[in-house]
Length: 185
Ligand code: ADP
Ligand code: MG
Figure 1 (cartoon, rainbow, N blue to C red):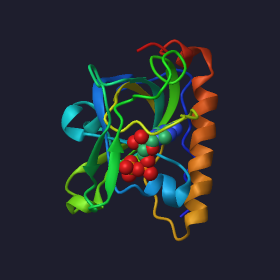
Figure 2: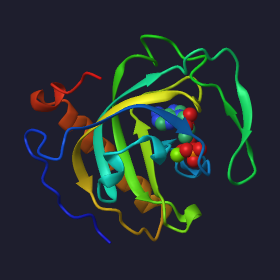
Figure 3: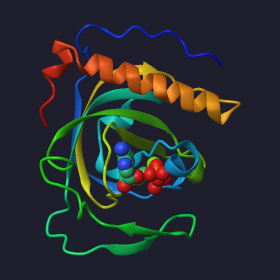
């Protein structure tokens, strides 16, 4: 399927902006980085209200990452797959560089196959190079616009290419004055 041409308005239109605060980054399958080279911070849908109401698809907005309050050490937890994952809660990230700064994000809202497509999955790719993973940290973010619907891909390459296009569209739009106004969380 080829991606539909979705025009992006000059400024956010209702229902945007949608904003969520202090949502925990949780472990998913661990596929985004491994298979696509595009990590997505999965968040707990139980901690968000408005964003779960949005239709499945790809969106963009701003995000700010926070270290989990009072975190002093990492923990080893288990993924749904049984594999181990380190929860570092944002420890090891730099304040003012990785943490507490507003960064662009491209988000995917879809149906989580692990839960028999009954539960929505919300994932944020943050346009930033982090020195390490940050499972267990929290995010505040806003959603300012819609990029495209969920599509079915026959090849991994086609999916990666479309995600790269999504990231470019997101960055370009966020750079415009009407979207810069929302660069505060
Ligand atoms: P999972 O299925 O557990 O979400 P991913 O392969 O999608 O695994 O990787 C997501 C994790 O990668 C995030 O939870 C975060 O800790 C880390 N990460 C590193 N850089 C980024 C980034 N730029 N955007 C989002 N997550 C990132
Ligand atoms: Mg992910």
